[in-house]
Image (cartoon, rainbow, N blue to C red):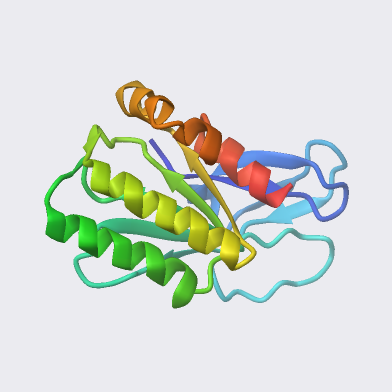
Length: 178
C-alpha cells in the first residue's frame, strides 16, 4: 500500500488525500482550481498559491524500533516489528518515544499500529509516558489503525478513554492539521 499524505489547498483550505509517489508533481485543487505542488523536502516554493507538503524521514537511532516520517509538522510513527516482547526492546522503545519530544521537538504525533499483532503490557506503560510527555510539552498525540485484538486490551485498560484514537492514519493527520 503506497504512503498516503494529506494536503490542504492554501487558496481555499480544501483538504485532500494523495499518495507520496506524487511528490514533485503538480495539479489543480478540485474545489477552487488553484495549483497545488507536492515538493521534496528542502525545495523552494515559487509562491503563486502552490501548497508545499514536506515529507521526510526521521531516524531516532540506528536499529530503531520506530519508523518515523514527518509530514510538515506532524510526525507519523510506525513500528518496525509486529511483536514487541522483550524488556530490552521495551526500554529502547521508551527511549525512542522520549527522543520524539526531547530531541526532535515533535508536538503533533500520530502513532500508527497497523501491522502490530502483539505488544507487552510494558509497551502500554511507555505509551502512557509518551502521552504525558506530549501533553506536558503542549503537544497532541493520536493513536490509529489499531488491530481489533489490541484494541480490546486498550478498552479493558480504558486506554480508549485516555488516548485520542482514530481509525486511520489519514483521519489522525487531518485531526492534527485541521
